[in-house]
Amino acid sequence: MSKPLSDLSAAGVAVWLDDISRERIRTGNLAELARTRSVVGVTSNPTIFQKAIGGGETYDAQLRDLAVRGVDVGEAVRAITAHDIRAACDILRPAYDASGGVDGRVSLEVDPRLSHETERTVAEARALWWLVDRPNLFIKIPATLAGLPAITATLAEGISVNVTLIFALERYEAVMDAFMTGLEQALAAGRDISDLASVASFFVSRVDGEVDRRLGKIGTPQADALRSKAAIANARLAYELHQKVFGTARWERLAAAGAKPQRPLWASTSTKDPSLPDTLYVAELIAPGTVNTMPEATLEAFADHGVVPGDTITPHYEEAHSVMSQLADLGVDMADVVDVLEVDGVRKFEDSWNQLLDTIRDQLGSAAS
Image (tube, rainbow, N blue to C red):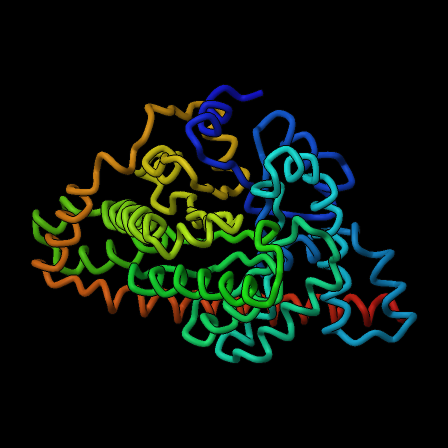
């Protein structure tokens, strides 16, 4: 067992892997990461699946069967991804049971082309929940304006949700409201809400990418001094907001009925700037009741040389507010930054989804010939 990662877990940070493939599952790699790297959850997205399915022969047998059956490409995507997610859920079921349903979770995203369609998102979430049929599944729904009511409706039906693509503090507050509203509706319908769980995926490194690009254009010493500080400050302020919202009387009423809090999840935690420490977005975002989902390279980097000094979020709220004030003084419009990032994030996932469809369409054609 990696001591840095076990220390991270002991500090209250759930270690999740931001990757999945059938190869990981069949070779026992995912089970090994659970044993030796403290991994208690898995996240997936269209980009991850596109790389996995297009990267080898692991899926050939299932693709041949789907081709023989004449399954269309949309249903083929669901069948293939659901297979991998279901298997990962089974591998992580011990973590789910040991944590009382908090961890051991595996996320499957709705078709990102539905990001701006509430009713179709809910219908897709319902279909994926039925198809995978595992209690430790998370359905990923983007935190777009249309996604917010879909989050509420999905939770109200008893489906656990990973809210993804959160960049803005204002949107994060709306996500937490959508979460609590969903629990309240589930409770009103007579559901046992103690089985429901949710995480809110707050994207980190992409914020630095966009802000640093703008700081580079400003080009002053003051701008240079703020490079690579916006993302961590933004995430720390998200945690401050989380503590505030989950300290309200509204939440206490839900907690008394058995509800689990929606945990902040730090996503996009690999460093894109090679001049930065490769564990930056892990080491600087340590606090109880959080999740950090890491690509394997970041996971292994932290396992090798990560350091856990304790809580690195709550002692730095004042500094985080100061960073945001300084950015505003320089003319960096964070509202515009997060809008750009949300639009770009949805577009990237749509592009990856379309590439995934093309990959499977081609492979179905090859399998049928």
